Image (cartoon, rainbow, N blue to C red; front, side, top):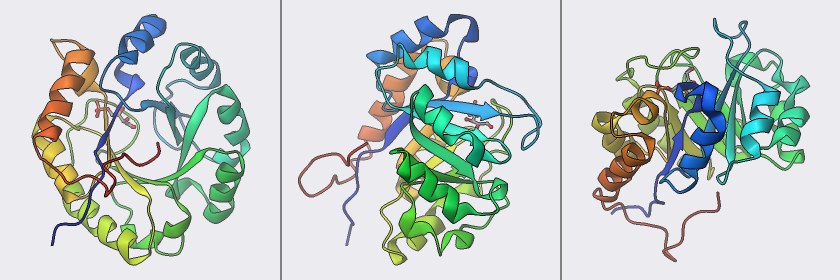
Length: 239
Ligand SMILES: O=C(CO)[C@@H](O)[C@H](O)COP(=O)(O)O
């Protein structure tokens, strides 16, 4: 029997945007197929790269029409959660590998009124989420090693997403499965079929010769063709 599925969400990653023109980049996505705007924060410690932080998020938030999905690739994220919420984050995702007291951090995010997400590096097994899955709004599966855009998709992610889907069902968790890294037209369909609910895409969107709006429209069209059954009332899950 086919289970009911929600329509997949698209989240372009600003890491690949034209950082000298963030207002224009944000405004042109306003009328696109993007559901969330993905914002990668890197600290040069948890990952070997430094991207952007609070002031840049604040600037993007002034023009954003979609919810800001903030992915914290930082050590000790618990010290910065309130500041990121105040800067405009609708969702905050921390790394499993960066949190000694993950349950506490997840509760902190929820108390701030944000969607609470936990990200897994490619080597981190989904089974480690068993005792916290029911508390999560999002599980972000890294399909590249975090730190850089433009890397090749790790094929094992498909199996990992399917295993995570099973674990979430078993735990009675309604967390969304988000996949991040190397997402493109070739792997988007299989990812959604495996259980992905949110696809993050950086270079596929912002480096597309046809431009980001058309790239997102093409991706949306391809996913629509999968004809995934939607939720019983035909409505999308609350974002
Ligand atoms: O978090 C990351 C990288 O650490 C991702 O969000 C990338 O920014 C996705 O970019 P592409 O792989 O799609 O170019």
